[in-house]
Amino acid sequence: MARQIKGVDTVKIFDLIQQLKQPNLESLASIYVILGQQDYLQRQIREGFIHLIPADEKTMNYASYDMDTTPLAVALDDAMSAPFFGEHRIVIIENPLFLSGETKKQKPDHDIEGLIHYLEHPEPTTTLIFFAPYAKLDARKKVTKRLKKAAEFVEINQLDERQIKAYVQNDIKRTGYSIEPNALAELLQRTDADLTLMMAELPKLELYCLGTKQIDLSAVDDLVTKTLTQNVFDLVNDVLSHNTKASVTLYRQLLEAKEEPLKINAILIGQFRLLIQVKVLSQEGYSQGSLASALKVHPYRIKLALQMQKKFNLTDLNQAYLGLVDVETKMKSSQTDPELLFELFMTRFVDNRVVNH
Image (cartoon, rainbow, N blue to C red; front, side, top):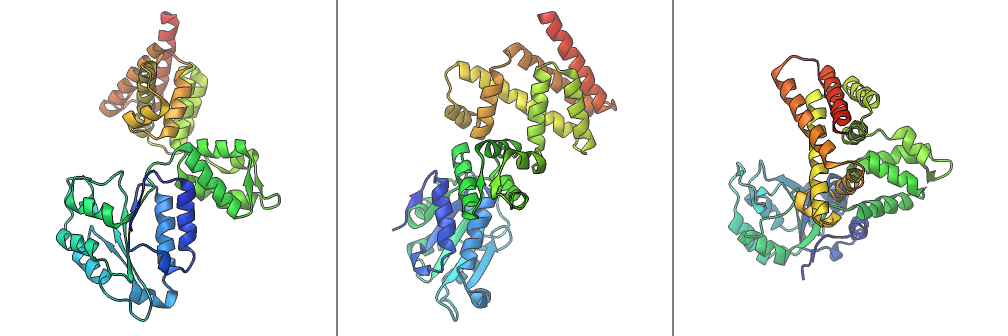
């Protein structure tokens, strides 16, 4: 009987990936839906399913179909075929937009009724896997309702800080390493709690710490570069601290790193908007979880915003936000140097603070 895993724990995801590394085809469900936008986990699970088919059988018994370019009926015909010179067939369906609530229509005509029929009578020697890189499916659609009854759902959409840490620690432990708590916290911060980025950093961290098998804070400091978002987070703190020298220096460094001025400014505006929203709503009693849900923002970003907004008043947040909106307008409507515009913004912002205090 199919079962649905909602808000699946990272330990369960890790177990699924490990299970797929074992050549036990009898334990597979007939249909899976891998739902969510965590690229790293999507890739790990996809590779796990692919590796279940022996290399000499892959040509005949494994296929992947992109619904952006291939009609669904082609994939279903393959799924209904018996395995050729093997025991099992793996068929992967990518980008099944017809399961989502998006209004954009895919170019190929898709045989949805044919899929519904297949869900009622799946081929026992085939495992059909839908990789749906969406936040959610459209629960109102008939095909989605049938799919929920027939398939095993694995939701990897938005992992919280605890789940991300658990997954990373599991993987590090599996390779015979350990990571110090402060190093893990710094890695989390420098990558914006993005699991894909964190996992991409592990190989070089492990190589760097080969002698001790322990990843420490100095290794993370030396090897892991901050993301643009994290640099802008630091810039926000400098701005709100009215530290003109630090703010302008960091802004100049971002420009020297070939970051686009409009992009930097847009992230700054977004961060100040978030701080204002979090400050206002937290005063009305919203918890971290309810803020993440209401604002549709990753829980880790909400956590950082909650910590930061406590240090600053709403007046400063509003003035900084409006000042940066003005900078954006001038960037788009004039040829003024972006660095000069930012320096003028900081000068006015600091002057306003002197006047208001």
